[in-house]
Image (tube, rainbow, N blue to C red; front, side):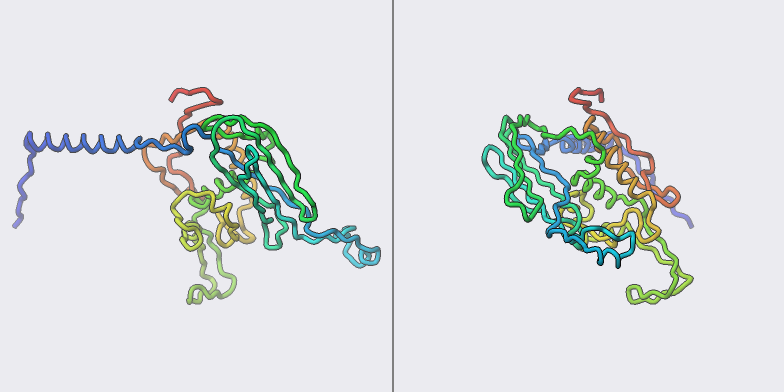
Length: 319
């Protein structure tokens, strides 16, 4: 026996109430979508940034090798001088109107501390003309830092940016590198790294052996809270605060079969992004969240990412 449920019909009062509720909900969403207004800086202030990547001088003097030492070395390794890999940290000091805003030392990168020291720092200051004095010291053996100074006019809500045209300089900007890395952390090119076992492996208390394969879940490692606090938050500064190992950050895979075009892809990403940001003000024009989709072995946006040009070189553009 089949029981037929009564059909629900809405009367004029119910329809009116439903329309009123939808209107109130739309008004609520519309108001809080634009209110309260968000300001990145206090009124009447500009933003002063310090961003650099620079290898310090060697921490110790180089030693001249003797002829006997050179004769015992392979031909391709016969360098005239023997220099230790460890480099000096870079000390940066910024003064504005004779007031010290930052005076700190930035350590070189690498386990042997033989890489470049990268620094990023910013602070809001009142708009207007200021005396800016910057001092750098990249040699522990030097007595005094190298000072530079000039007067700068900082307008409200603007930043004193050096007009770098050299792509090599742009590609080494620390904060730009951090933004690209944070983007690749949240949206890795490859979601997993599959490998076929060549010999037995002990993994998480389990023993697996050939011909089985294993996958390293890139997307899961990149959102592991123990490595990346607040993993769902876009915060590029995390890549300035510490240097992640190849086992913690690997958007292009890892090992001997790492993507052969990773370096060029990252370089291209930095140049294109910097060019857009220097010449245009863009905003997201997608009505909904952009969902990822698999494209063969890589990931990408399912429908592309639509953007709207709001401003070009200080001139307003049509929305």
